Image 1: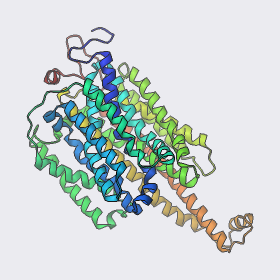
Image 2 (image 1 turned 120 degrees about the vertical axis):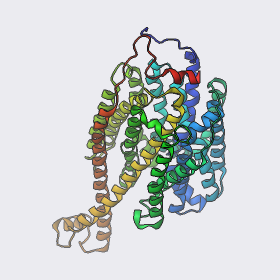
Image 3 (image 1 turned 90 degrees about the vertical axis):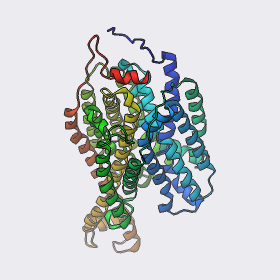
Image 4 (image 1 turned 90 degrees about the horizontal axis):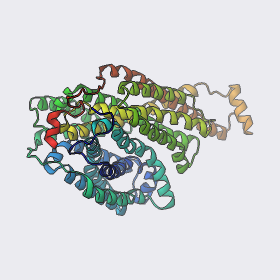
Length: 524
């Protein structure tokens, strides 16, 4: 076998791969940006649409629930419609729903259109990953996963920056309109260059879909609304938890007894590399998304950074991830992927530990460099992890595997966000009471604080200023506890690498490990 790139029959040429990459990455970036680009615009939307803070949060919940429900259908619709037709349908639907969100005049309308966005956009990320994996020869698949990972990892980081800028210079409606030109570009390129796959007759498993959808919808609802509803003290959260406890074991048993016929075949997890990659990418949710939720609170509420400045300060994390992914994509085929992932976990843990030294007196540089280092760590993890996930998976199951992988990445992110916000809120409450217990009128520190501001220790204004400081300090220390938890989450994941099989080069005459013979024949 020659050492250089080979011309594999049935694969696109170099120029065609470039245009395919541009087409699917435009679709990917469009979809992942929408998970965070709207967040900073919510206060502006709340006032214009006449909604309260609980109602406006349904813009996020509706999108995430509909996306989670439809993502497992990627494999089914790829078989029935063909990969290219399904991709084009998703792009058209997502662009149309985005435009409708931009012209919406009421909360009900925009929630409905966000549901449609989630439905049509749910397959864009897994389809793009499957197309990228199948468009490149095995020896270049690491580079393909690096390019794909740029959109998936960098998009959510750049979303708040772009959303804040669009909201300031134009309107919150442009956080939706921005999808239209990107979607048109993606549609035109995909029409011309993305290869199709043969359509196969496949029966829709409505029973399995109903069971799985109920479980996923309730899981997403529980994770998204649990903290606001005070978790299991709310009856709707208890009902959601009960549905989850019934639906997931029931679906596992149902799918196991009907191999190859269910909407999401659990037998795919018999591939150990794929199963462990899915577990790791789900566990990464806390490290990937926990800091993205916590840092804007620190920057905007406690340090009084403007929205756009907050986005600029957070951007180096995404830049570091992008640079690292490009570099790792060039060497992932020559190094043991487990070594790269382990190094990334250690680097990410070290950066999260550095964040535990944040304070209210910190400057922008000491916020940027730990986040930059964490971006390097995540870049080291994501490319080899995506490569390992498909290294031994039958190529005929790439689309189904990509849907499951993206689903678990999404669920892991939701869990990470939920854990971060819950720990932050609960620890801030505990610290408020703990720190407040040291405040008495006879405390010399309290008297010195009041005298510095020309007040007496018992004046109402001094009490108000002290309450503000107490709230800020308790929230800051709670954030440090979250960063400690994030650091430990990376360390705890390290033993999982022992269960991953290392990649090896195929001997002459053998089929490539990433391209089993029967899977290749099924699609060519």
